[in-house]
Length: 303
Length: 242
Image (cartoon, rainbow over all chains, first blue to last red; front, side, top):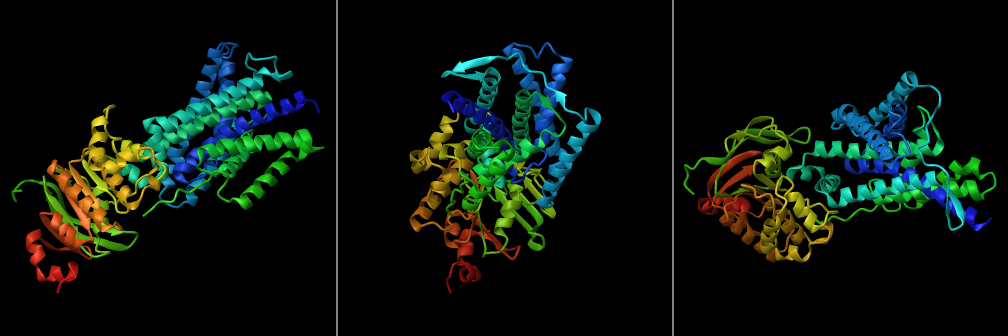
């Protein structure tokens, strides 16, 4: 194989990995704060892509070649997905929070089924074509020709991760989020309204999932009511691989999973059919060796 | 402190249940007046921590009133109670282990609207110079004594009117305990009212002007600390004297 082909594979791995990472962040943020797995996250991602499609259909001028239009498309889809996630938390998880640890989990599975069926019954049972943004053609990098769309996807994903990093590390609300993740009751003693922080966490996680949904639509060119399931499940696994609750771990896990899949389909004969098997086998092995995930650490608390 | 000053904090017949069944408080009544240091002593399991948690809003009282500056606290969530000027330094310190010392302090001031908190930081670093040297260090990597100082400094960042300390000396070396009690006295002189829960009764009674003795969820004695120190029963039960 020539260098250009290897380089193309690297870019493929990065693109897929970036999408997984964005989704994995939604799982890990929520887990970090509530120690709960938001199984409805894959549907939030799906709704993000449908919101973008809706916007493209009803307000096509937005969805043009202009970078501003593209940014607006992302912003609206992310806001819709974030808001859905907030409402799901408010009405399906919060009332159950104090009952048992299992109750919100079951509620999450229920929400996932409801949202999928709502789109299935009210919007479309078939795959809908997702309009390509006004980004087309190839860009030549190191002699390899890379699709401009892939670069847009990668750039958007990395930009959002950088924004999240800034929010969590350097803003007052981001620090309050980390404080809640460390110790809920004590955060309350600091005057932090835990319910507000939880809602913001669900909004941020949902918005990132929504962005991933838009990127997914762009990458594959069509969307369907059940599109969230596979990438959602994989991203959840990526979050566990990186160490669930750990933000850097989610990004790392997402990229590792993306690369594993691309390597499997690009370098192993018949690998494309086996890529999920190969990827998940590696994940299982890693978790057997390191059950807390790659970056899942527990800071010892001295007493 | 004059005895007829209005109470800053007043508990009246407070009942609370700990866990699912354990009746931890059975009609507790007490008062803390502005400017006082009041100690609450009692053995392990007497209900001291339950009482602190109930006042701070971490537990809901079953019955009874908790008035802070005339307003009823019962049933309010912790963040609302804290914003009224009542801060709890919880038992076991509970600093945020994965936040730096600076970030822990910043969280202490979460409820404040001001952007510029440099005076507050300076004040905390003046009281606890060691925290100033460890600004960037993660809370979880501090020693027990430093964590206690961070927990107190963090609570002071909010400029509370009433500071409640739950077992501040627990597990600390005597020299660190000295330092902590020095600071409590200093904070009080600066105008902060203090409610102090301690198993180390001797220390607590020395630091406080009045004290309550809690036994299995009930107040069994309430007096000036001078009188309590002379009380034969208290001496026997809590001070290890015969």
